[in-house]
Image 1 (tube, rainbow, N blue to C red):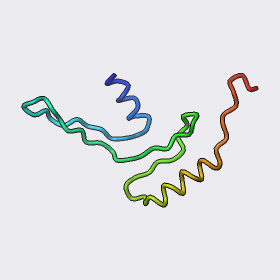
Image 2: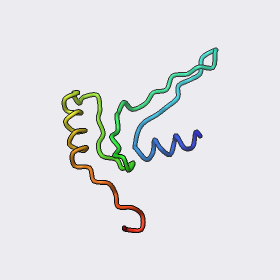
Image 3: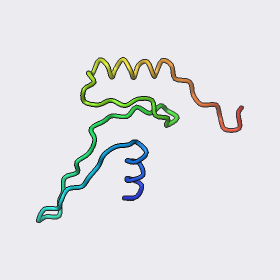
Image 4: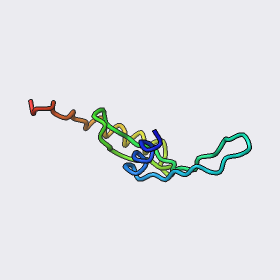
Length: 77
């Protein structure tokens, strides 16, 4: 829903704004240009902007993959 999109944008602190509609009802969306890394448990691990090189992103992702430890199951077992 639109509210869920707004909530996600707030949670990740990203900018998003729909521009004016044209005669056909189409519009352009201006937004932050970021890639977010979440681990398999859905926890935020890193954020990559356009200034990061492919090598930097790959090194970061590999580091997070190598150090990943799953959350314990619910109930602490």
